[in-house]
Image (cartoon, rainbow, N blue to C red; front, side):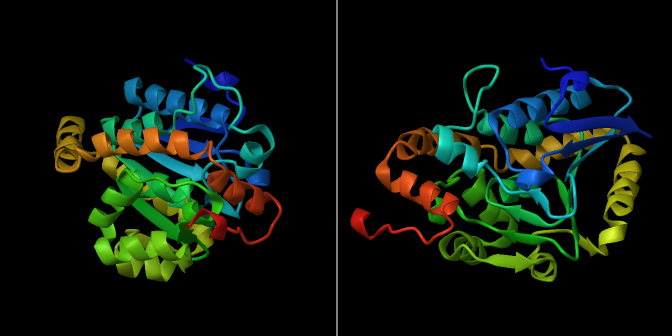
Length: 265
């Protein structure tokens, strides 16, 4: 497992019973490459076993983005998301780990939470958003999708109609709308985001760890079957990303033009 001292794409720190995991690729809007996911997996595992940690904050470096999902520029130029420890892009494992880690995870959303980044914040136990945050999906536009937790669990959070709107229209929604829909718990001024997240995290960490662990797993039990749907969806996604249809989406994104999917209807 990668040690925190070896992290290049994220940062990890522990203070006052709170572990803070920061995606540190602000020049790429904190997009995820293979190395990033490997480091996130390691960081959550470190937080899991660290008895100094009672709660976890997940955030993105800089002011522009929380996370914008898979690095589409990397994908369009190399055909994948770069080298990993296992040879796999283990985003599915990351999704399941955020749910499995027996400590509440709080997303502190600054800027864009788009695509796979949107899925990450939805999977966190709580979400606090800056007033400047933007939420949305882009998968059908860039030749990708998350038809597991990204759809079925999202529908649990905001309802079927809103979830379908988010995926079928690929629009962006501001923080006030996200709060109104129940997509985030709280909206604060940008300069209050980190302090608010830490305030909540410290409050959570002061409570009984056994009670919190049991409550989290109880909340998850009702939707754990989505993990099976997720596995099927990622099997299909692996096949889909090799098609010309998917590649057209990624290529159009890189070339900053609208994709032409008409030939695939």
